[in-house]
Length: 448
Image (cartoon, rainbow, N blue to C red; front, side, top):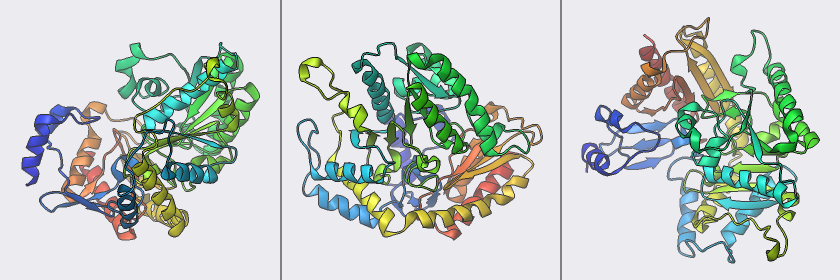
């Protein structure tokens, strides 16, 4: 079996995610036979450096020996059992570990299948909490401009990226959208902290006006990933936590993309010293192996649902594969690796090397900004550097970078005209240099 044969079979049966399928008339899908570490290999033997962790999920490399061994052992014992009325060791162990590591005050773990599902759980829990307490007027949510929380209808409603949301607007609940603290728009000479603090004032005003009808504010801590990897200062989270407490509104932290070491700490909320009412986790939760998500919340939230059955206060949300034993085992093995390999300290050095490798991009005539938070680095391409005028989106400059990357053996998948690095944590200094070199070549080709 070669690349061409499998690609042809694929095109006759598979509808790919987040893809205009007609594009594949001129750019075939890339079949992958195997993976090892940061590398993927196709059926013709060509290798590709996975610079984006296969949509941000892979933490410790493909075919990680430790996670593989853990899954093989679990596979011989139990693959899955329903989590309604039953339980198993991997689910209990993982919940205990997550709650031990999470910000103080989170004491309950609710499992779901993926990131969007976790957001749905948090939204429903928050709404239902207020309803159980008799506050029926609390039915709305506040989200941030340029935010992204998933593709299911509830998650899509609380996002704000038109590319994904606009078509489905008639199906979605109405939300209140607050200005983003995204520091790309700060004034010349203005610090990230000053800009993020200034932007918070507008959200505070919204809370003051609408708190009585608001269930929760939902944010992506520190990095709005699908929203072009825009970043902001932790002070925003500190101010938001205090305001949510003051106005009696929940705080939902969507750490689906930024959790598990991506921002420099295990959880991004740690950098602000805050505990959200709901912490949504997925993607890196299983090290990139299997679908799983978790919503961590407090005993206060849990107790609002704990009552006699006849009160009808129970939270009846469910998924068939909730708490899957294999996925929980992968999650436990991934957490083991954080301790065994001092990952967070090593990541700080890798992040420094990524920053050094990308530093020359800042002088490129079509790069508006190079920004970085931990192991996430983004390079924003523009038509006019001084005016920060973007390219016409229809020109698809980022697609040219993607295609060049594949030719040179690096998987880059820009978000529009934002090229970014979010590699597995096992990447080497030499591989970082290669990643940056190929990205620079691609940007040169795409902007000339």
